[in-house]
Image (cartoon, rainbow, N blue to C red; front, side, top):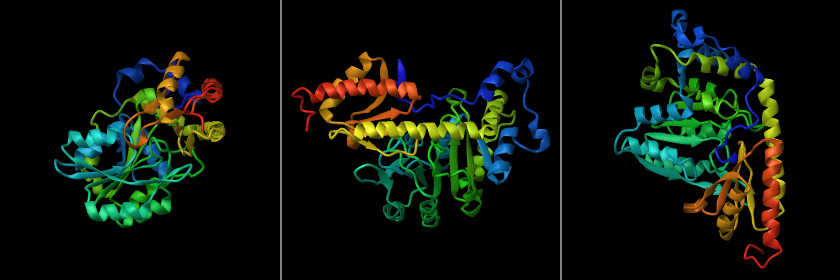
Length: 351
């Protein structure tokens, strides 16, 4: 099977990361970290703090950003309290709120012919109306692919002093709109937390490495997330190697942007489909509702998996992970066969 359904980075991790796996020794596996003797939580948090220019105590490591999201929500959302999330977003946000007995309120995304975007005025209006304990912003958002600009985020932060604002940046690094130093905002806005992961851009999803950059209003989370015996030292070494290979990942990001354009070109030529512009390593595509079942069967017979949405406002949408050049060519050929077959028949897909 060719799996293009879970937003993994299929170009793979930097070669140095693979070398570390090959050279791992028993000492790395059988002993605890002693970084605490130097007054830091870990070498990885120390390195991230230096690169992002924020205090090391404000860098929190986790088992992927999924784990840090869960810790944050469980720390700050109590039964009956409200967390605000994007209208079209990752199902897991609501699931974690449910675990705490909290409620979820959605703020709207706006959509034009080819892209989704955040409406900052409507978000601010919703904050004033709902008064949430937590405001979650996904940038880029999964599955719509849209981001929030730095200036837009500052407006929201200035208008939400009563809420903790959590920005899920799992998909940072896949566009030219750099947010590399966004965590520095946590010094100016103590109610801000930035969640990131090594799963997507750095292609280390299987190693489960995430981190948060948090402001001073997250003291409870800083204490709660601390690990007396340290962290996974092998995963830390892999993450440090990834951070040393910025040029490799910059190149991968450029390749993924080029591959996204191939999908845009393909779907833009079809009157019946809309491919929404994305800042992530996936794209969301609207297809005719009557195509959902036959396309699913066609892809299954070809041994290819993409994500199908069948409920709510995203019904008759698919999300495609951007694979390697060869993998994308394989899927595009299968899609070409499917849509050509529909267009030369009397199918209702034809417009």
